[in-house]
Image (cartoon, rainbow over the protein chains, first blue to last red):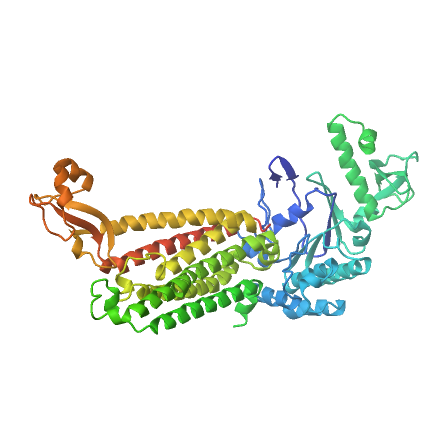
Amino acid sequence: MTKRYRRRYALSDITLEIPDGGVTALVGPNGAGKSTLLKLCIGFERPTAGRLEVNGVDPVRHRDRAIASIGYVPQTASLYRDLSVLDHLRLAAAIRPGFDAGHARERLGPLGIPVTARVGELSGGEQAQVCLAIALGTRAPLLLLDEPLANLDPLARRDFLRVCRLAADDGTTVVLSSHALSEIEETADRLLVLGEGRVLYDDTVAHSIASHRVIEVGAALDGVEVVARFPGRADQVHMLGRTRSVTIGRAPSLEEVVLGYLAEARDQAAAARGQAPEEAAAA
Amino acid sequence: MRRWPAILRPNRPELRAAVILGAVMVAVGGVAILWLRTFDIPDACFSGRDLGVLCIPYQATMLAYGEAMSTVGNPAAIATLVAPIVVAIVLGIALLAREIEQQTTNFAWSIAPSRATWLRDRLIPMLVLLLVLGLAGGGLGDVLMGLRQRGVDPWQNFEGLGLRGPAIAGTALLVFGFAGLVGAAVGRQLPALIISGALIGFGIYGAYTVSDGWVQGDAEVGSYDQVAIGDKILDSLIRTPEGEYISWEEAYQRYGSELDSISYEGTETSSGLRVATRYVPGEKYPAAVARLSGLLGLGGLVAIALTFLVVHRRRPY
């Protein structure tokens, strides 16, 4: 599937499948195509070429049926500022058959968000929580969450991710796009890295960590396939190697796996431009 | 029944304003009508024909009536015309342009499985409100016209065609439809207001032009004294001795100074020339206003149908 905005490719000839159940973390730099992919799933965008299916339904041809199986949290909370939370729940119940307002309220209760409060009076984080509560209230088998953690404080993030985990444990498929890699590591079952409009990496989180090692630059590689060099903390440069050997380097964090594959994509793009990887990294 | 208030909750401020404006319009129009009806003047005195003994005692009252009509009656008539149109444009812009501009469609269209149902559920109550307001305003406008030209049935009177009666409801529908359509396409309130304002102007002009053509098709030719108040005079002509109707310009070319002695009373000149009038009789007014209202309303309905198409295809942001 390809999605092009005028001359810019948001997604370029990608093929991927997100399996039922669990939490899939959709990660990548800004402009990688994460939001575009989610918007394509809910029928807000149409593919330029190719096709996609959501629970077996083409959201372009049968958007109504596709949306009926999706709970969506957009990147920016697009709620009615002058309406109360309760108004939103009533509105959702009025326009969405089977909307479970009680379930949504259960979600908001422990967070201390009063349902009578006007949305305009809530913080960005609280608005994101309201969006998630409404998405959960749809009781949809698929939740698409577009960078919902961006406006949340650390405690709220944890709580948000806990709810995602619970939903996934109940059989809901959760697709979560995020930059907060360290925090989603505990929640996500699957990692999908997008970059430059392509799928750079797609595997389970457990396998991603088990099948890679972080190796110091200059250390013996013993035949390990190096994915790429990537910047570590305090001006260090590490290498991400593909190996299951536990004797080489150390186990990576999820963030390091992602950084390694993003760096690989950067190096490949630089090579295509005739640039050395070091030059690309410096740039 | 709790479904409708929830669906219309985002539009509650403008719906309330519309109801209040409608109530004010009815109150202003109603008070004006009641006040004008307190003037005890025989209708015959307004005919312009019998100002003799019968009407002399009412001259002062007639002056006061004229003053009341210009200070209260006419402004009330304008209010009955303007209020439904203002409500139509406000509701039309709020329907989609505001939603898209504030990106609340992101929320609504991700929750509602069917955008068409979402739009329909909000449209229908707004349309009902607009039609009620338009018909109320148009009805009051008709009554006020009846009081402005006393003794003439407003439904047999071409004066103010399109500015009163069911045409107000048709105009409101057209304005609402165009504002909604442009709002859906543009997705920004101010540009939608400006663009739809221009398109509404063209739309109304087009409907009036077509309607005028239809009205002219109903025209008859007769002598000047056959024309009654309420008839629509289209043209003044000359009837030749051969029974042909020609324009004054052509008549001057053919008959020259003989026309200087022509009388408007319907009498013939020595060579048989007579003034004639092309006019549409007042009894054709109901058909004319029905056609114009239908045309305006149809324009609005077409715009609404196109709005569904745009909403189906466009992004919610």
